Amino acid sequence: MLARDPQSVPLGAAEQFGLELLLDLSRVLPCDGSFDTVRLRIADGEAGSVRTCISSSWMIQRSDGVVTLPRGVLRVIAAIAGAEEEQRCALRDRFGRVPPECNALVIERLERAPVVSQAAVQLRRAAADVAARRPFRALTPWPEGKRWAAAFTHDLDVVAKWPVFTALRVAELARKGEVGRVLSVLGAALRSSAGNPVWNGVEGLLRAERTSGVRSSWFVLCGTPTMSTMKAGDLTYSIESRGARRILDAVSAGGHEIGLHGSFETYSDAEVMRAQRIRLTRAAGEPHGIRQHYLRMVPGDTQRAMASAGFRYDSTFGFADRNGFRVGVADVLPAWHAGTQTPAGIDELPFIWMDRALSKYRGVESPRAWIEDALELADLCRSVEGLFSAVWHPNLTPALGFPGAPAAYESLMRDVVDRSPWIATMGEIHTWRRARRSARATQLLPDGRVVVDAPERTPWPVTLEDASGAATRDHMRASS
Image 1 (spheres, rainbow, N blue to C red):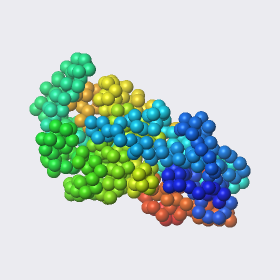
Image 2: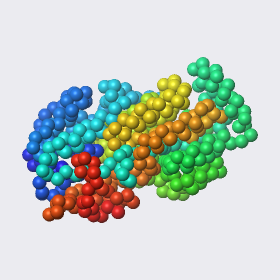
Image 3: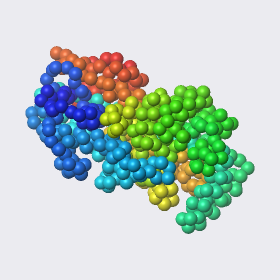
Image 4: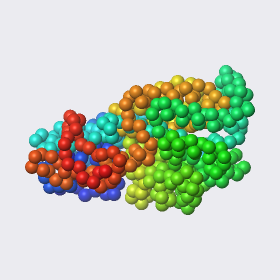
């Protein structure tokens, strides 16, 4: 357990955000009681760059029953996890996105490491090291005894007019000189010309997930397509169309989650988001999550609009042109608005890996190479007992331009499942993490058990473990 030391210096808003995030990710049970436990003391002091923090083990100091951090470390953590550099950046690419060169970790060439999650692991270890005779409790990382978690997600960009998308993909491959793949795609498209390769791809993906025991999260477009939106690569289908209805019904029947894929128009417009949310609710039930199409957003402003529109979580913070940890976190975290120095009112579930980041932006056309890249990042998430989330587009099929892709996705699922994560939809993961975040130690009983309040409700019980990771028999209240 961990309590704030009364000798700590006062904190600014961003420093408080960094502190609360670090404590949440550390899993050390916060203490609201007055009993003797490990204290966290925040002292004056600068931290320098993120590389300085990493090389100095985040400047964590240990003494008997006390862990000390300089407040400068909290500012570094807030800047990374809150995407403050991106929010200050005025540059935009052709899709209105902040370019990756404005990301603090990309600048330092550290985007392939979950640096903030790693800092939290070091804080937990330090608290356990100095506990001595004091009771130490950590919250278990994930339900069902799992040490890490994984989420598989899909952006439904294509439902109809599939030959257009095949032609665009063939042109892309031709520009790269991929003659063999072009011929393979044309052959697959010709064999599928009398059928519906989009539906076949979705059906095959759902069948593979059922076999692997995976329930996924699907983000679907929900505006009105026009010739202009289709040319821009934005809205390409109507959610009420027969093809979309068929897909939504199959996704729902499989127990998967459906969220909104916010169109270009939503950008940072809460009213348009709200209208699309209402439309999706009528078509498929109330969505709790959102991810912006093409990752088109104004960091901070878009998240505030999402919260205003009624969404509970966002999953837009990931890179379009590379894979890695855009906010340095392999987990769930509150979104931050740098301009007002306040939380944005919505949680972020950043995705770590996306298929098209490699094939579209990096020129890597080997599906096997995509999966190797995904597993490398999954193992990093596993090493910090965090969350690995992947984006796979269901239109990645041979007839639409991606030979070997469906088999690669099945391989990815098998390899991740074999690593024994807790696999759930993003909505379920978000519910669980809110419950874990709400837990507080309120009393120490004479027999050594800890009384814990966890007011946020979840279908999975919030439990505790000791410094060795062994389950404890403490008293949990209001966590079901």
